[in-house]
Image 1: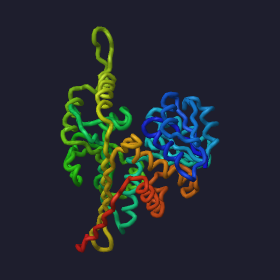
Image 2: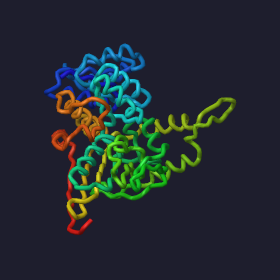
Image 3: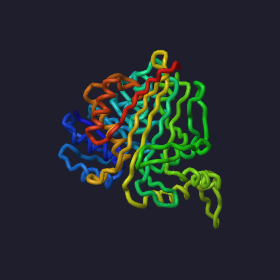
Length: 385
């Protein structure tokens, strides 16, 4: 199997490393605009299977030609480059697995089918693994009514003032905090402000009490699980984080309206983003990732629930973040499933639709073998639903 990876940042480098160490992958080419990031990816992987190429996704003709060389492509590009890569993949008739989700991806369905291309969007941790597990849990019930996802990357050693360390892009973080969250209530999609939904969530020791709030992370589930009566995704943080971010928002520090200081026009969100990026990129890199997926419904006449839970930690030996592992491994495993022909089809296919129950079990087993452990608990009550 010949595989390409677009992007060699925190997530792309892990995807590339995991693909290169897989027996069923013969060749991996990592493409990025930044030569320094590519050099880090080569050092991290240290495999003859892996080569790199400097490539700009804005160069449409070249990227289309590049994508045609591979059996499958994994994309780990930042928001702003996602749409360009996805459109190039459709043009190239490529099979692409993308860790990012943007609603524009769903609009590529007709073009992808016409060209014979396959795009699986939002296939990392969340969106991605969380949605795959939620849909799998729903399939195990006769009727799934309610679904909840709790997920977050946390520093193992939280430092003031925010008790958080950046584990993915600053752009992605601000999207989570500033954009309205789409959730499902009473079978309808509604929008809520993230920091109006802050509540408590408790994980087993040593994690303990955290806080969680709705963010716009349901992604493809808004399209594939529309029959649910209640559905939401909540981002998990250490207690106190949400109140501090809410304060910054209410102070206008994330406003996009320009203000004039000493004759220069500046945008508060640009300044705040730069300063936050510096603060949130400092401190020890050791992180952990928590995830809980709950599906509630009916099995026969009785109330039933399926719960998946995961707590994962930083890889000290390989120096890979937990967020990088849980996101990157999910993407690389599904990428191999596509490249091997286990996942087939054309068009834009959500990951929770692409993987049937057998493939979900295989994903679960492979993650377990890579050190990412997920527990499953089935609760079938005796009371009628």
